Image (tube, rainbow, N blue to C red; front, side):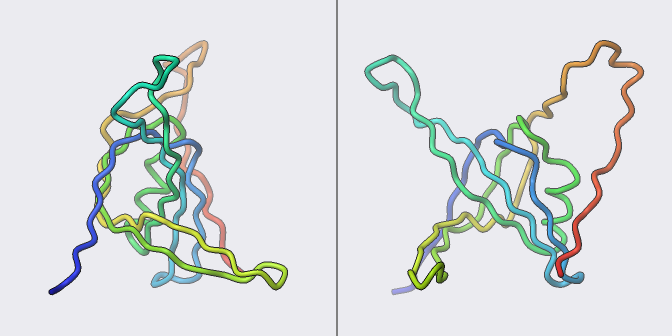
Length: 128
């Protein structure tokens, strides 16, 4: 029997995405998505999961250019676990690999004069 790995999430970007470009094929964007659980805890609040999201190539560029802290995002993708070594110890991380991203609501910073606000495209980092 074949496996099936698919996840669909709606949540808010915790911070602006981190973009790394090691050439067109290896462009990578990483950000954290805050997703509320569908129930309330004893204090009457929805617990929140903070999920690491990774997008590659063209989708990485799009995520970097349009997702900002506070944006409400709908994404679908797959869950992936990987390991890495840190100080001789094996660490495991679970990430959501984005395959489709839709911005449901843009979050604009409050300014004194919104008409005078000029949007600028953030500069991308080049990987060494």
